Image (cartoon, rainbow, N blue to C red; front, side, top):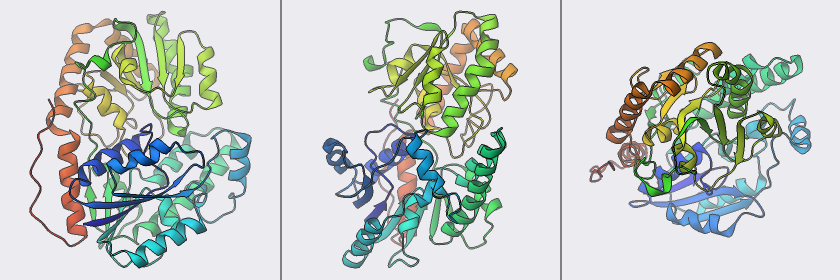
Length: 421
C-alpha cells in the first residue's frame, strides 16, 4: 500500500507514549508498505530527528511550527485566545494554512491507498472528503481526559475552563469520528467509551492493543543495570512526559497525599520522577526530601532497574499506558490506580496491584517494599504476560491486517514474527 500518515509532530525523540506506540507499529509496517509522513516540526528541530524518521517512512515532509512550553506565561496567553473558540484548544492550536495546503497537494498529486490520521490534531487540517479510504488512530478518548480534568479541578475558574474544553472536545471528537472509514482504538475500554459517547451503527472500530519491545525492556540487558550498581530496595519510580497534565496531576497527588503515608512506615523511601519537560510544579517536587526530578534522560531503563516498585498514581487519563507494559517487561512490581491501568489486559493481584485511594495505595506500596516474596511473584507474572502476548511484532501484524481491510486490499497475512523472550 501507499499510505499517507498525518501527525502533529515527529516521532523522534521517542519521549512520549504515543510516539513510542506509533514508532513501533510504523517500523513494522514500513517493511511492506510505502509510507509518506506529514507533520509539523519545530524550527530548531534536530536534523537527526528528521533523518531518523526514514527508518519508519519512505518520505518525510515537515511544516514549521513552534510550540510553547506548558505552564509558561506564553502558553496561558496563547490558550486564552481560544477560550471562546468552538474547537477545543488542544486541537485548534494546530490549525495551519501551510499544513492544509501541503496535505491537499499530496492528495492531488499522489495516488494513496490509505490516509491515517494519528491522534486528533491533524483532523483540523483535513478536507471533508478524501480520494481514498481513511483511518483515525486514537490513542485516547480525548473528551474523557477533559472530563476528568474538570472533575479533579478544585479552583472555580479552572473548573469552568476545563468544563468548556470538555464540552468542545465532545462536539469536535464526535464529528471527527464520522469522517473516517475505520477508527483504531488502543483498548476495548476505549472502543466501548467511543460507542457510548458517540453511538453509531455504521462506524467501524478495530482495537490495536498496547505492546512493548520485550527485548529492549528486559531485566537481563546490560544497559538496564541499576545506576548505582545495586537494587534500590526503598526506591519508587514513575516515568512519563512530565508536561502532560495527567502525569503532572498524578505525581503532585502522590507526593502530597500518598508519599507521607508511605513514610510513616518506611521513612527512608525515595521517589524518582523521570521524564521530559517537567512543569514548574513538578520541578518544585524536587524540594521534597528524597524526591528527585530528572527531566529527560537518554535511557529510562537504569532508573527503572534500580527501583523496587513502579508507581502509576494517575487520576486522569485515557487510552492505555505504555509505561506499565515497559515496567512489566523490566520485571517490575507495579502499583497503579484503576485509571492508570485502564484498558490494559492485566489481572489485579496476579501481575499488577490496583489501589484507588491514598491509604490503599500507600499500604500496597509498603507491603511490596517489605515482602520480597510477593514482589518477586508479581514481577515474574508481569514479565511473562507481556513476553507471551504483547510484543510489538504481534500487535503490528494485527494492525496491518486491519489497515489492509480498510484500504480494501485484502492480502495473505504476513509471516508471523516470533516475540522476543
